[in-house]
Image 1 (tube, rainbow, N blue to C red):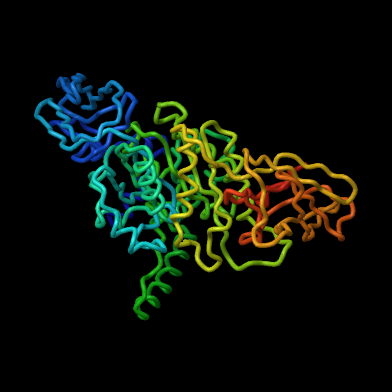
Image 2: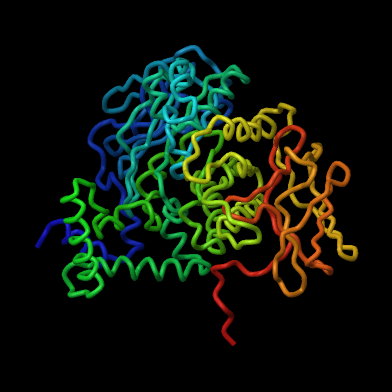
Length: 525
């Protein structure tokens, strides 16, 4: 039997709860080791009790010395040890971190500043060199007080404790392959706050939200019973040696397509086994890419993801806030800031009205702001209809960075896009009142506010005219809807919409109805 297939078969026979208990270092360490997070050029989060950890021979006393502090711990029976440093203010002077146990490790050039985790899928992973001004930005990306580290792609159900990587100074070479949005936000923070900045790249294009969440947590929550039942079915379909018809069919189809691709000199599609180690399987990216960094001192998270979950917006509306809550839970540092970019406009522009799961995903993202210390950046005007990866990441980052600057660092500036507040209906007029957060509404290019739709009790949507009324309201009317009951704005994959604040922040897409998600299952009576 093929060893790879034997491993897959064995994995699927083991209870999932047992698989999730597996970690990289299952046997006690025999020598002093630290994870890749603790290497030369690292940045520690200022003003927090940062943990430093690693492994050594069980029972060994380990001493960590840094910035005049000395902390000790004893390696547990599994070899793990951890200390916490007293909070330290920002410091751009390189310092030495010393770890002494069964041997000694010297970590050079350690700075103290602001550390942000950059995570999500391809639009966060999108490299600086590919930005619309990538050549210029890369050429100027030479700042030794900004430090970068990559967590490599790894999908696994095992809870990994480490990864292959190390911190690097920000240079044109290192910045070129770093996520553009993360780089721009980090550069803004450094320039404005005048402190060192550490950025962690933990991204994988085309990943699903559930892949970033602990598998055990998804299995324990009844809201995700359908997701996990379908996951288990898909895993079982990949059993190679049980005569499974679905597996045999998938293999036959793959072999035909792969042979054709090879004959044409193209890359073959992913092997059917790929799902087991890929970025869609629930828990895979948590185990392989998030678990190794849990506990490292961070200020917060910058996130851009959701495109791959567009087929199930109602499910995503539960998954996304759950991800935020789970990360905060496992980090054990309270409600750290979590800021994200809402899905940009994409696909061919369709005439209004139209249904859109992309619009539903955007609504789900907006709803997640009910959680504390969260914030959303609207990018409905910054996408490209023909490209799911718009190249203008600088403007996205310039909006995203406003959230931490205002909420975490005390600056005063416009930072939050207008959001739907209330609806007042009088006759055939529907007046939408926005919360503008001290801003003033302004239609772009035309006096008419474009992008609104109205419907009556029949739930049939019609294109509507929007007229600005004061600084925070829009009056919406349509000849086809004499008695409106609901309004929606920018409700399309790639909507024509032109409502902004005078400060240039795009209005948040919304709907006023509470009707079912497109993926909702019909009630059973």
